[in-house]
Length: 305
Image 1 (cartoon, rainbow, N blue to C red):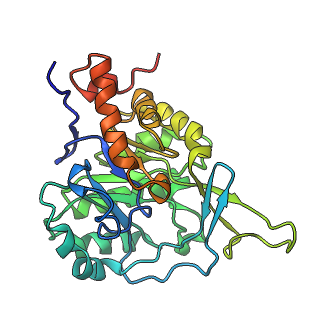
Image 2: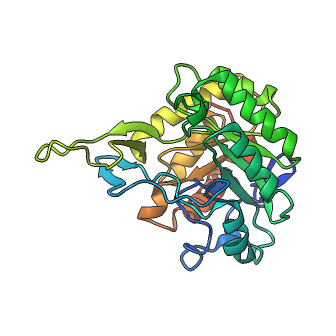
């Protein structure tokens, strides 16, 4: 039997296999290039880019939990121009590697500005729109938890680019289905599910939160069952490809996401533990397809009974 087809299509972007990395867990590429053969990834999703350079939150901003980790990094980054100057020259070396830029903003205008600053760069294949950042202009509510604001950001970005756009959905909503439908209606090419889950840890001796920011986002194995359910729910109401993520440490985890309805997956926290995880996941998916006599990864997407 010939090797199965692992390719995934998201708008105009072709991934050679369904495995990318979760934004914020892989830097911008150079940080892992000596540990991982980037050419073997389906795509690279870089750390969040805002319109301006940003320093992030005070330390401590990470804390290991039993079954995962908390982080309140605060989206530090070089800004759009800094990304173009510092990292794009490196990424240009990988002509066969789609680059997904995770983008964020404190206002709707910020998202538009990021696209305006980056869109002429051919190295950038697609945008992942982080819609879990505080909407400062509207009292701190998150874009990702209000369907109207969520839709408006996607529509504004859609008007600024022809490249694929992939809204990243917030997990802390009562029902993810309206957001999945809204993403499709607003012109998205795919959706990614899920972001880290709001959480907290307290030191019982100091009586203080373990994070300087008090709360942070929980990631790792503890959130995988939540992510699987959200992917499965969203897949019922949208025809958009879904990039599933949350607690993928082994090939079996990724395969579970695909069966739940994801077309592709992103490895996140596991990159900190074992940088080879992404490549093991690629190989494991391929071997699963061979063992189960599938000609294409598409044949297992959304096959949950």
